[in-house]
Image 1 (cartoon, helix red, strand yellow):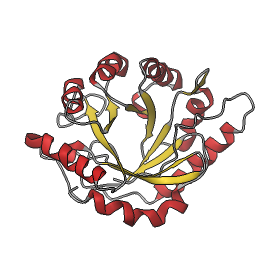
Image 2: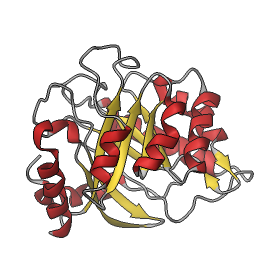
Image 3: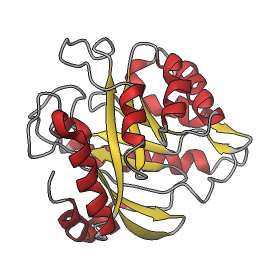
Image 4: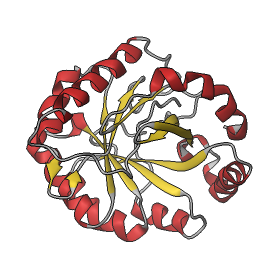
Amino acid sequence: YHKYEQLAPALRPLEPFFYSSLPLTTTSAIPATSTPTLPPSSSVAVASSSSVCASVIIAPSLLACDWSDIQSAVAECEAAAAAGGGDVWLHIDMFDGVAIDSPHALTFGPQMVAAIRKKTKLALDVHLVVDRPLRYVEALAAAGADRVQLQLESFQDAEQLLHVAAALRAVNVSVGVCIAPGTDVSALKDILSKCADDGGWMVSLINVLGVNTGFGGQKFQQQTLDKIRQVRLLISQIRASPTLPDEPQTHSNEGTAG
């Protein structure tokens, strides 16, 4: 957690493995070495713009920091970004203790996002795992969230997820989708096939989780690597459809660890 600036050079040899020219980002969460009460879903991502690997993206989860001194943790991340350790996002896990059925899975809310926004210009990446996600859309946009990652398993079907994704896009918030280790890649097909709109793709990032959300001290599930390949292939096949728009150049391709 305290050595973000050292991670980017170490991950650059992995760029050929993680990168491919796809319309959506693909990421994978790997457990952190620390074991907080609630697990971070921090991300260390290899990113690219359309066809060239640009940099490593590091997205440390604020769940892993000292909650009594979050401002210092944010300052650490800013220092790492300023030192050239890669692009840095702040990952904010927003769990309500309901979607993840545990009294310990009650974390941050829009008010915390707003407070963090006042202290930094770094991108705020919110992992939203809540019972009624639609009601948080406007609050998160007003709080200054740059991206919201929606947990696929929190939704009844693709239509419900895409309804929330469209609402986020309407308030200028980027959208990602997280898929749990136990969920088959085929569950993404409906979402990806329907996620194009007049402005491009409603979903710009797929986070292939290498651990289960809400539980600390887990080992990285090795089958995640093959799952990333499957997701990349699925995206490539869907993008080949002549009825879908090209992916906007602002979107990037990623492989994530954390």
